[in-house]
Length: 341
Image 1 (cartoon, rainbow, N blue to C red):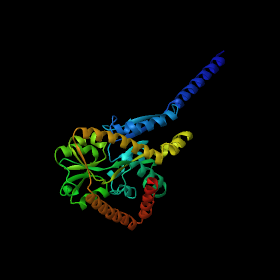
Image 2 (cartoon, one colour):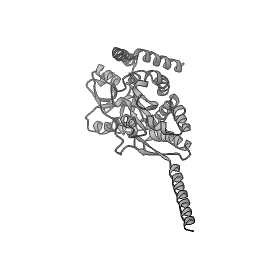
Image 3 (cartoon, one colour):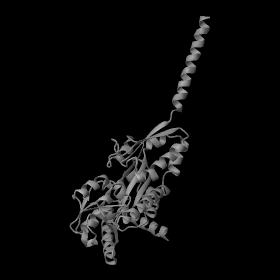
């Protein structure tokens, strides 16, 4: 009798352990996502969070996603790439142009006057990234390079064309924009977008470059009411996943991330969100009486001449450092021409 009871107890314990193991294995794998954008930000709600929800829904309960966004300890604008590369985060979205030189080849796409259509530029650079930019993103699985619409010049004072920028302190980002302002006699000032409002409000800077959505999401349009439509640059962001995290996912989810949630169309989705949301901001600001001024023909010709010189110099500097910058630039402009036709 004693032996029978002992056997029954052992069986019950084994069943209990089995049930616990099954319960544990059924728990979803938690992926951590970070960005500097606040949870209520229009861009993350148009693009990033829906994309993450697609991944979560496709997992059928096998993964969950925990977000660390603006206001949290993991939202630092300059640390997003490092965090996902090291595995502190599983997925991150951050600004590439906040760290000049780290993504030197990629920055070719930030040169002034390169193109007005963000979606076209996004498809082009993401198509070419595996061939030309793999070394710069070797530490992560690059889901997409995200390209904003052009960064125009937003000023406290009334617009007086390119000559009106001389001596002005303008927040800029990226080497191309900085060189553009220096050629015009302006003073480029490097700072992340969240710092622009306060510095404009207090007069530390006279203007700032940004795409249109930032006029609302970072409140730039509250203190800069005059807008010069000079295409100084495009901001570049990245959306990426830690390589070990990707390898740890079930095979079907790995394929989903690689084939459907990465690449040119993902980049184009982001650009479409920026354009849609930004155009609405412009409509609202125009209704308030703010002015949006196109470049004159003479200023456009001058801007194109300056941009060509800056681009040639930058590409040559990368070539001198042993990088295939000329081949990448020619492939990029070739893609832009092909997609435009």
